[in-house]
Length: 146
Ligand code: DQA
Image 1 (cartoon, rainbow, N blue to C red):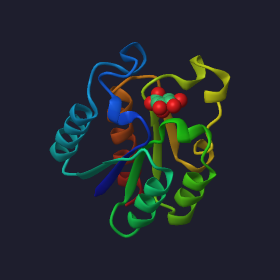
Image 2: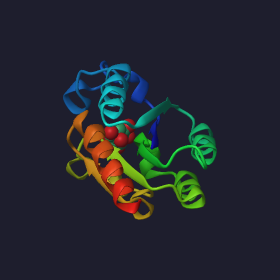
Image 3: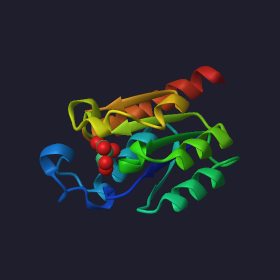
Image 4: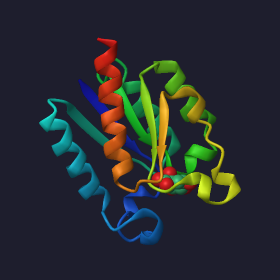
């Protein structure tokens, strides 16, 4: 399989951004961990971070026919973006939603995800491990499909 990992706005600041909430690892370190984990499982991984909603929408469109699964941390767009939700619906690529922090422990505006209803499932609150668990989840899901 080939899996696309999408990181939304402000996740490029990981490592320096609110480390109490988001941990000390940088985005590059998280991506490297994921790529290593994936390659040990024989899975190819592509990663992309953007602070722009349209770039994320374009990346989801371009994933069609190339990636069999998506892992997405849409950052704050989780709570605002009908466009990202519609893009995921449009390409119908199985997707796992991940969050470093437990969004349900935080401000009420973070409790609602526009993406959650259109993904297989959501992993929230395990720091960088949320991505690793997301990788396991999408691989197991695709494995059962085939
Ligand atoms: C986040 C949670 C969002 O509410 C926030 O806007 C982020 C990061 C997380 O990974 O915990 O940017 O998606």
